[in-house]
Length: 326
Length: 292
Image (cartoon, rainbow over all chains, first blue to last red; front, side, top):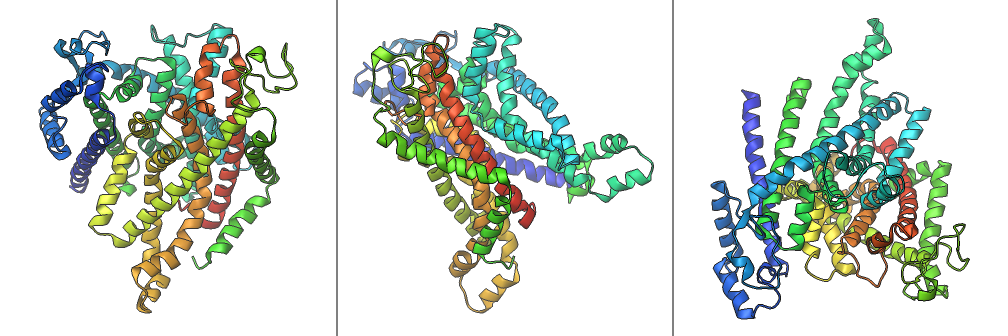
């Protein structure tokens, strides 16, 4: 079948993309100065010891050799062990150089799976909030491009897109947590801790969603089959909900696919500010500690998510509008 | 498209200029830029000058303010207005320079990729896919996280993380231009690929993309602030929006203005820039259609 063939081709392409991403991150980490072994053994360790451990860990081999070894591990389902995080959750104290080497290190896949639900919860709530704000604004702006609400939507998008997420996070923490005491903001104990970070993320994504919705509504409402709805005796709202909404959801799904990495970028910064225990916070610390296996694992999972989501979006799109299949 | 490049640019700009709010934004933006680049040089107050006696002064109209420090002072008695202006200066330099580089590099790669349509094209497009699939932040902090970042390395890293989109857009435009009659005509007249790309196609593809890239300048300025906040921007004592806000988090409860004022400053500038950018984009869409 045509669709099945295309599906297989997309998946193969996706695998190639994930491989390239992993290789890029893998090489960048090793080309850029900054020795992870120095951070593992601590600043006081003699140079020859650093060199010896690096040799033992295989970090002095040529990059393609290291990458091949890493891939053969990954194929067996093993993402490797963290350089810095022990299994029992206690962080090592860099200074004493043989302390860390005896402790068993946490597996990267465990670390990622542990954090993933928190990030999904945050991203899901953020998406929900931004859809609630964007839908009414986007639809009315799209249907009446010269109307008052269209101007408001344009204004809100311009302002929202200009607000740096970390600053908004601090301002919200200042007013809502410190001055008003309404919502907690630092760390995570229960669901309430998700709300402020989610609002910050929603503000970041709103402009894109409003824009996409209004553009697609403006385009689709000009289409012949929508205009003919009036002739068929449907009310305006009937036409919007039965036909326009369904068709306008295609660009929205596409946007979600394309913007996933932007959304995740926002998640990284927001989680860092709010000290939210998700994947983003893990990423920042992994990078700053040069925890190679952990960074590689996160990059690979992220890029696989991106590729997978885009394929899924395409499949849903085809089922909504079969004309696009060709 | 049979228009030559100068008339496309003129048309887009002229169309936007009809909008009064656009005029105001452009003038205001130029004013802010001049302020950021000139005022810190001629003023007697210096951004790095500490004065412990006058630390934690609030902005004007709050209790205990001083007229010499309109936006107040920080934990070391440094003038907030000056620090914001110097921070804005770096933000503008980094925003404009990085977008300029990513625009040129991305478009060049994209156009060549679109014209060659061979294994070069396949490889370049898969690389852009790969780069678009991971957040820019990961890439940027992996590179900047180890060395002491300076102006040049930040600009390069931002340009590196932003080029794929330009490559893809210009490639898809190049694919359309490639089969047009004027290109075939030029080829029959004996023009080689180099001549066709640089003298015929680039002048047509670049201007509309350049207008839209104004929005990216604002995006890169935010990104610069994020890097600064993470400690990976231009290093202190040089003030940038990011490092001012990061340092001020400790004093949030007693001196709220140190963390919030730079943000207000940045947001006002970015709203202006974004308004200019999106008005230009609208005009471009009106003239060109929703091509890119």
